[in-house]
Length: 135
Image (cartoon, rainbow, N blue to C red; front, side, top):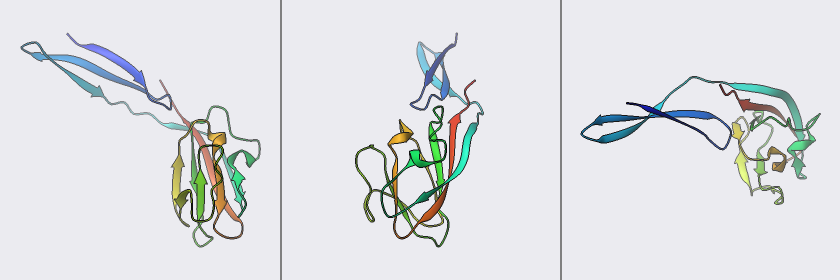
């Protein structure tokens, strides 16, 4: 006999595992894999300067349903550093590093805690806010 167990991760994604009897009273937990997708809540740009810039500065703010943001830094325009605790402002050389030309996904609750800084000048990054589609 098989028993299904469902649980959610920190982002609300739903997972299912099945407890199966493999014989002689031994049970095994097997993960069941489903295909799912992220839903894009907003796609916009943000001008990041050498002063700490809050992610909430995007036009219209951070969508309430979003559980992550994908930030794309243009090539050749400089690097980005960010912090996620809501109080620590990143500085040039400290914080979590996103080099020019790279893409990073930030998953933290709440996303409004994210602060960014440019290594030089003003860098216009693209931001894709999204959430996991659950069944």
